[in-house]
Length: 293
Image (cartoon, rainbow, N blue to C red):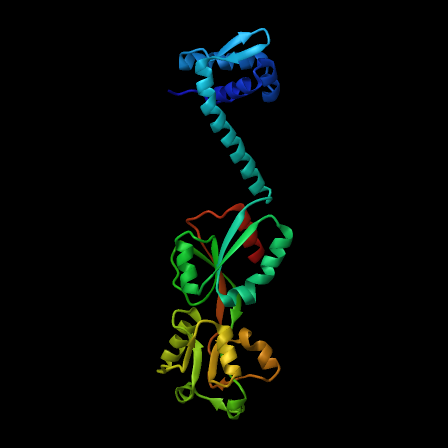
């Protein structure tokens, strides 16, 4: 059965108002148009839906049955339109972001503050995970976009926007002060106690790959889950810490830590905003992407 949905809209308003005149007013159409719509619906369904009375109209038994279903469906459509309009007007909505400790702390947070000030009604959920896990969350559709650091595996459907450079360094505390004025070679690291991140992180992978080009493989004394812990271990003189410079900056500025100097600097890498082009962004997520870009 192929019935014009506009007839059901007319039916809903007439049944709710129990008046053709009142329904015509709500629909902003003429009374004859309402009557004609009801007639076409009754013809299509093969039954009378209303009894005309001196006070208006009254549903038949068939009309009561139909209205119980049409009412729920039509009001759900109205609710959907309302929610959609709220989303378009940025008065409701949700963003799901994936970020590592580093990208959250040294890139994303200021933008989240700006975004929240502009759109306080938008819910923001941040999933904290290393870059490889964030990329998997993105491909699985569990987040709208990720703030990640290179290196990571890219695919044709992933849109990658570089937004900031970062520098990996080796830092040490007072126990290793004798290294401060020296120009070192990376081979020297093999004789030092090394503190670094776990192998599953993009930072560890990047530094390991760089050192492998120099035929060097580190055997760390400590492998830790977060860069903040690497810095804290270095402050306690437990070894030479390998971190992104931003994590140690405040301690470098107060001379509690220093950066070891090598004959070749580790190349800088990038923080990137990544989204899956196969999955359309919500209005709320799109607004934050505009801010980040």
